[in-house]
Length: 277
Image 1 (cartoon, rainbow, N blue to C red):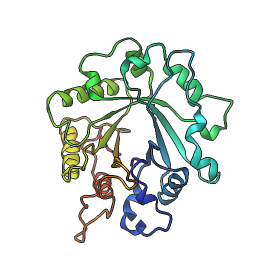
Image 2 (image 1 turned 180 degrees about the vertical axis):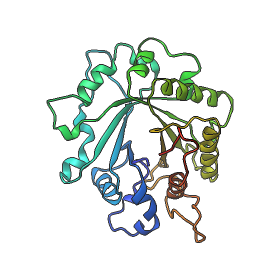
Image 3 (image 1 turned 45 degrees about the horizontal axis):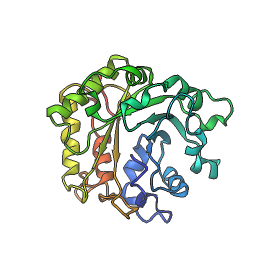
């Protein structure tokens, strides 16, 4: 689940906690894009879920090899304020505005800052560095620094909002990303988002159709990740799509953000060598 857009779920008085009990107990973790979310809201959200695994997103890399990475401590506000909060920092994913941003910037230098850095507390460090892409950036093969970053990263993420990947050129580009990272034995993160203002009410249907399409094409493998992010609308801290409840009165998944998570968490592995998270 995306951190940004989850402000409403982080409410401190617990008034909506009973509307997403299954997801709180079974969610695999959080995608840490902390735009428009305070450290206290983040801490509150962490305290509501059982599995505290984090993949952090950052939208920039250094402007050249001598510029230096943003300090790893910038991502530790919630945990710094709550030292008893233990978070498994699985990976940090860098998502710069253009593949050309990787020229002269290496994953090795990112690992030195975020994975093996001995000058910061160990709890601030991550297990791996990922890269992030828009599918269109795979319309032609990556080259130069971008190709090197993709090959050296521990995994990759890409965004397919709504039903953008249900066929056509965008699906082919996403297919290229998935098969390329799987060929290296590494996972991908599907960044499943709503990206319209106002949000399209058929987002849950588009999400399921895309998930099932990937399944039909045999694209899921163990350790791949589904990440659902509820983008904020302008001047809103609650996210653009209804967050709760997770289920309807008949027990079926609700057309909400937690309902989509509830549905995804109930999907069985498609084959012996494929699974979802």
